[in-house]
Length: 212
Image (cartoon, rainbow, N blue to C red):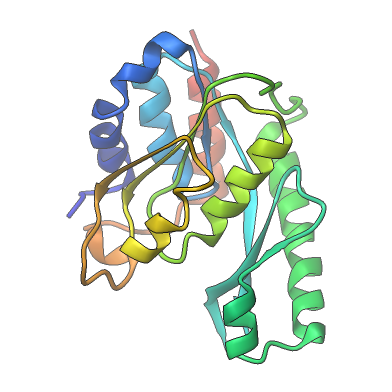
């Protein structure tokens, strides 16, 4: 169990030291992935930024992702098997996509504070989150990075469900995960403190990372 996201980020950073020579860009998936990414960026002395990804929730189960949208992707990524199994209607998907795009736009504008998205062409990129269940958010992020012509892409998470982790193997050049419990239930179960990360904390960490 991790004490909180910052501690998980420090443990994860210790496994990523070999990337420092590549001068990577570190991206956190807001909100919870940003405290993790902050510690990785500090260890690698790398720039920190955010890659906004929004999940598309299932009917009556908003925490269950049936798809995701990400910066750089015009079309959402849908978990087709789950959409079919849950009989998710086109109307529900349209509403989720519209709401997701609106919130993604709000977050992108708020967190970036007028700064342009970094040029990732040919760069080594580490993209971090606080954990991974279905893997949909990270899959959307990795697909977006490919379309943004990033070079080597590394997915980094403290804890993940085995099936979610396997879904990343064909999309990332390297996947780094500290714990892959066979009896995984939820990301929150592996943190003593898993309180929601507020917008203000994300902005504070991004500003702190830009200081000399």
